[in-house]
Structures are given as structure tokens and as C-alpha cells.
Image (tube, rainbow, N blue to C red; front, side, top):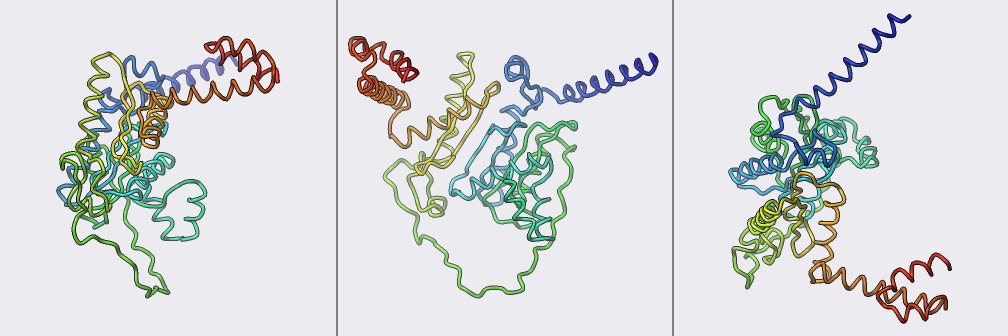
Length: 347
């Protein structure tokens, strides 16, 4: 009996050590490491440098094909790490890139698997929708040495296999950045033919000439891209990247990190990046600050100050109406917040 226990203990220890070895087998060049990894308690999540390289390679391939894309890279927890929206992309292109990446992350497999399944059995797509999954190609898991470190999703361009598609773009980028260990693409199934094709005309919207702007061309989307979105006042991806680079360099020079979102004038993502060591709260609050500034047309500190003033005003009204400790609150405005909290608990 003791011998069996010893054997079981040795087997369990060996199994645990093998898991640790696999986790540590991911080269540091691809994942968050050092103090940043210790801070987030995760040594297996994709780092900013790798995510940025994947996006750059995919965007260069899109430029070579004369198309525009949106690309989203997630870490293994589903947090956004890096995102680019090329000029001329709209809401659907942007959001589907994120949906494809999340589907690949949930499946631990290409999002095309669901698309092929829906082609074979169309009612299945309703189930996938209920599960929050997107049955379309363009999402791939990012795996290094059998360890999932994130996922990538690409959207926004019409497929022309075997030469081009969102998925082919993502796969080429992963192969160039990660290496030949990236598995081959899943086979494309022919689309199911509609037995009752509709003959109704499909409306198409296009501009005869690109919209005009009074802003410097270097800062905004122009030409065909502006015509695609019917707006020549949206911030361009090139400008957004310059802002992000300056912010990243400044944070690094101070020994810190940051998460950053740059939105266009419609509130859609243009560029996003999360430096190594940032957690969900950092990422989420960066987005909320950008959205608040867009809605209020003010810097977020002004918005925060205004929020606090309104909170103090409401607390003062509440305390005054309740009649408990209201005199003390009126005499000490600087202690109003704490007094209001006490009165709120005692109501």
C-alpha cells in the first residue's frame, strides 16, 4: 500500500512539473515576463511587442492587396492588447474583428470551424449566437509550444481565397511572427446555395467625390477611405499611432505602463494598446476615459471634478432633507462627503 502511495505521489509530482515546464517553455520574446508578469501573476500571456508585430505584418499584407482591415489581438484572458482600424473601416469591420478573436479564444480553434459547421447545418448558427460566438472566418488562436497566449481577429475585407481573406492575412502574420509551428488553415467549405434567391435590388451607397475637410490632411482620413465612411474628419490611423507612441515612450521613461484607446469622432476604435503589466481595470478605465472625453468634449480630469461636485451637491441635499447632522455638514464643506456617507448609512 505504501509503495502504491509513493508511486502515485511521484506520478502526480511529475505531472505537475511537466505542466510547469510547458508553461515555462514559451520563449520570453512572445509573452509578458519579468516584474510585469509577476504583477499580473501570469507568464503565459501575449506581450505588446508580439501583438504589435502581428498587426503590422497583417496591415502591410493588406496594403499590398489594396484593401483595408481592422485587427484585434486579445490576451489569453480576453483582454484587448492591441487594435488597429485602417482608414476607411466602419463599425461592422471593427466589431467583427473583435468578435472573431473572442470566438477563436473561446474555441481554442479557428473561428472558421463554426462557419463550416453552420454551412453544413444552418440552424446551428442560432446556437452559436446564443453562446456569443461568431460563425465567420478570420479569428485564430495564438499558440506557442502548445501554450495558448492569445487570439487574433481580422475583419473588413472581402475574401478572395486562396489569395486573400481576413483569415489568410491573420495566418500569414502569425507564421511570420511566431514561426512555422503555426498550424495550416482549415479547409474552406463551399457556401450553401439559397434554393429561393431573392430578386429584390440591394441598395448601395457611394460618394461621387470624397468628402472635403478643412483640417490638415495628415491628421484625418482622406480620399477613398473618407468616401467609404462618408466622413473626412475622422482621425487617421497614422496620427493615432503617433500619439500612442509618444504616450508609450513617456510612460516607459517614467518607469510606468499604460493602457490607451484612441477613438474617432463617432466613438469607434481607431487604435488601442495595452503595455505589459496592465490588468483589466487599467484597460477598462482607459476606454471609459476616452468615451467620457468624447461625450463631454472635455478632458477627463474636468469630468471627474464635475462628477465630484455633483456628488457633493446631491449628498448635501440628502443630508439637509434628512435633518441629521445637517448643521455640521454645512459648517464643514470639506468633510461633506464623509458626513454624507454616515448619514446615508443611518437613514
